[in-house]
Length: 190
Image (cartoon, rainbow, N blue to C red):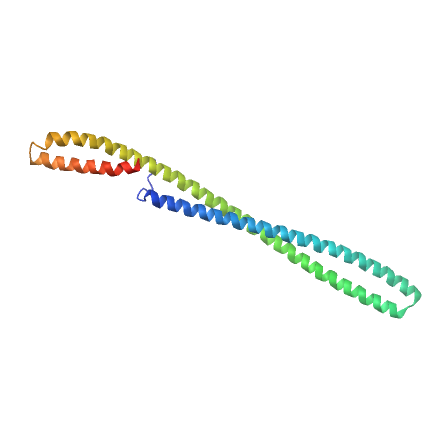
C-alpha cells in the first residue's frame, strides 16, 4: 500500500479533494462559456457571409446597369452608378476584413477550448488520484485502529497481571494503560 501523505488528517484530505473538485467545476464552467462564444461568432460569420453574397449580387446588378447606361451615354447616371459600385466594393472589403477577424477569433477560441479541455481532464485525474490515496489512507488508519483495539484488550489482561508484581510490572502496566487510551482515540477513525 502507498503511504505517501499519511501525515495529513482526513479533514485535510477532504479539503484538498474538494478544492480540486472546485477547480474542475470552474474549468467546466469556463469551457461552456467559450463554447457559447464560439457559437455566437459562427452565427455572426454566417450572417456576414450572407450579407457579402447579397452585396456582391447588388454590385453585379449595378455593373449591368452601368453597362446599359454607357450604351445610352448618360454621363450623369454613369457617375452615380460608379459611385454606388465603389461604395459597394468598399463595403465588401470591410465585410471581408470582418470575416477574416471572425475566423481568427473562432480559431483562437478553438485553441483555448482544446487547452481548457486538457486542463479539465488534468484536474479530474488529480481529484481521482487524491480520492484513491485518501481511500488507501483511511483503510490503513482503520487497520491501525483495529490493531490498537486488539492491543488494548491484551493490555487490559497484562496490566492486571503485572500491576501487582514489581516496579517494572507497574511501568509495564502504565504503558499498557497508554495503549488503551490510544485505542479509544483510534475508535473515532473506524
